[in-house]
Amino acid sequence: MTSAFRIHPDDNVATLLGDGEGAVTIVAGNEIELREPVALGHKVALADIAAGAPVVKFGIPIGLASVAIRAGDWVHLHNCTSRFDERSGSFDLETGAAKDMSYD
Image 1 (tube, rainbow, N blue to C red):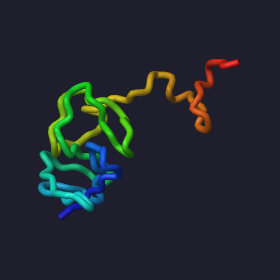
Image 2: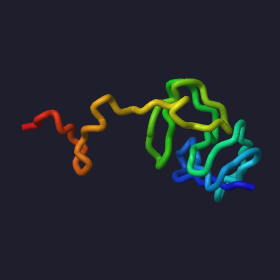
Image 3: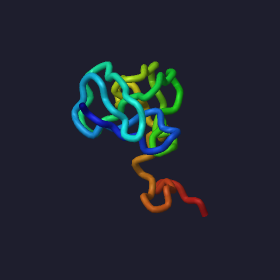
Image 4: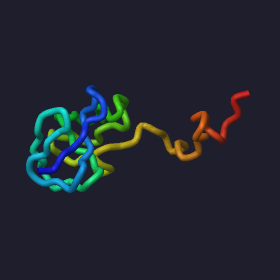
């Protein structure tokens, strides 16, 4: 049986530690039934996530559900959108400031 880990108690997704199908054991938690095959390193929803609701990993929102996501669904680009705008690729990696704007 494949395992997955939940990083923070507030997370509504877990990351698979191997390719998974069927039942998955959440490390230090319960078990969830995958609704589709999910590859190693990808996220699975631990609970239903409504469209527009935050997808939480590391205890922080990493994106928004673009459609309703059911517990056991694979969570990836097809059902989750970034909370960053189109400029996010130009942020300074150290400070997080946009490189195309002056804050003087």
